[in-house]
Amino acid sequence: MSLSIGRRSPITFNAGVVRFRGEVYNINHAFDLASIFGGANPGRLELNAEATHTSLLTTSVTGSSFTRTDNTVDQPDWSGRFTATYINGGFRASYQLAYLDSVLWQPDATIESTPVPVLKRNIRHNLSMQYDMGQFLIRAGVNNLTNVEPSYPSLSYGDIIGRELYIGVRVKI
Image (cartoon, rainbow, N blue to C red):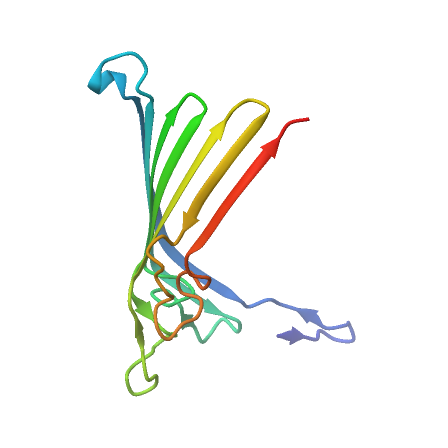
């Protein structure tokens, strides 16, 4: 939007608006397993859960017409992650669960406007391990353990690669 006053050059106003309402929840707990099982040094367990809730996300370029994109592929109403990590000396093993809620394919999608208006929820599991021997650190893992494909018909809502194995070594010189 431009406004000309007298003979002055135009003044430009940005009328864009973003409305957002949401929360992030996080809980962490770490403890030595000796406090439960007793014994010498059975290791340490770290648990973490995080959830993101978006109840409103609208955008407008003009300031008058709004597009609501919450509960779509771009911004699911709920997403979350749970991580459990076991640590004992130089050994570390970790499990992660990633969650994406079921969403609309696009804003205001219905069966009349879109062949598949709702994408199913997507859950992925990852495992990793590493062992630190001082000069060497060896790590290996698998992402998307259960080989879950993206939620149909999207190619991006979830993991597009599929099951992925990796192994690595770090050497301190």
